[in-house]
Each structure stands twice: as C-alpha cells, then as structure tokens.
Image (cartoon, rainbow, N blue to C red):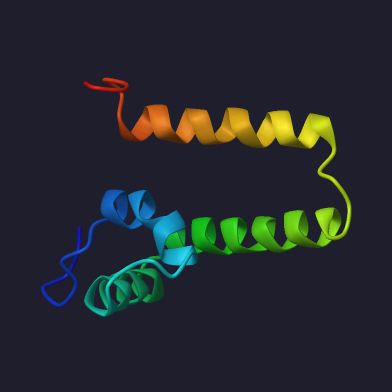
Length: 92
C-alpha cells in the first residue's frame, strides 16, 4: 500500500516501468515513480532487472544484426506485456 507521500502503487509503477526507462514521463510522474522505487524493494528489483536486460541486449547486438531467435523472443515478450496491459486487445 502506498504511503501518504507516494500515491503510486506497485501496479502503476510496473505499468509505467518501460516509459520510465525510456525517459518519456513528465518530471512529476518520473519523480513519483522514482520515489516508489526507492521505497519498494519488489518494484526496484523489477526495475533493476529490466535496466540490466536493456544493457545486455544493447551490448550483445551492437554493430550486428539481432539474432533471429532473440528478435522472435523479444517480439513475443512485448506482445505478452501489451496483452497484460490491455486484455481487451486492439479497439477494446
């Protein structure tokens, strides 16, 4: 449960994790998510994992084409995340 200084719950923090990592949040939302991450070990662990994964993918694929098997896995993972965020699907 968020404290009175942090109106961001875990679900909201995790839903906005990728947008946070991409630096696409407003300064206020970024501060709210950062505050939540500083106070919530579970969400911070998810953040650390995703940030590390981005570094590994970036490093492994720099200068080369992404291996097809990795590309397929990334696309599948992105579809899964999109379905979890919007179970009604497109137009739903």
